[in-house]
Image 1: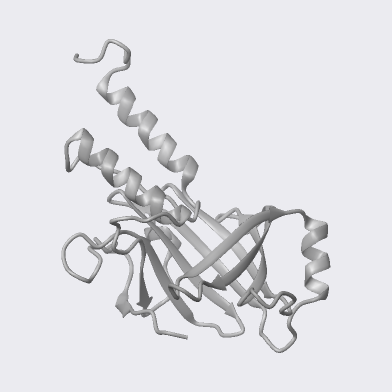
Image 2: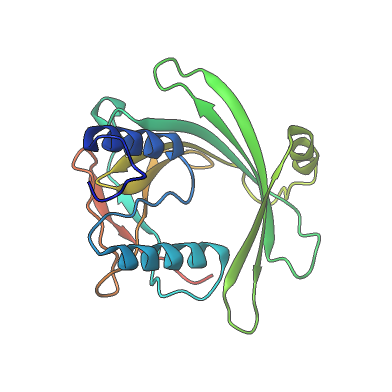
Length: 222
């Protein structure tokens, strides 16, 4: 009624928004900005989130929270729009003195009904600590399968290869990923929420009622 550019109905707009969110489920930096503030406030939150992700100064206090689950999640209780991935994480030998550590990762899409593997993407991450500020910086880039296999040959054999199954979904406009550890340990289930602290030191998270959450996990210094 107040925007001549938009011609769809309210119902159509809601459905397009839902489909857009579904298309991005599983992305490591998925945020849904609600209308709890005016438009300027919404844009301010958007700028803060993007600034934090790319390493620029931000007012965002915290952009994630982790929780320990008591039991393995049940697929049948999840919302309809969820994605399943198998992840293999391989640490590399330290080749550059300025890099704290590096790892390569293979993420494979999985059909949750048939357990069929649908395709993989590969990534390398170099992590370093900035001495002046103590901040940890991650530099990531996509690689191909051959680069991944080459990197596998120079892996750090003193460190375990990490294997997980991950389940990504949205609940109440919050992005969640469950990490089900398969190796080197099993029966460990971590819920990762993409949120930010609004008031106080702890992030505000509306936890999904279909998960058995034991407690919040706090980061510890290396």
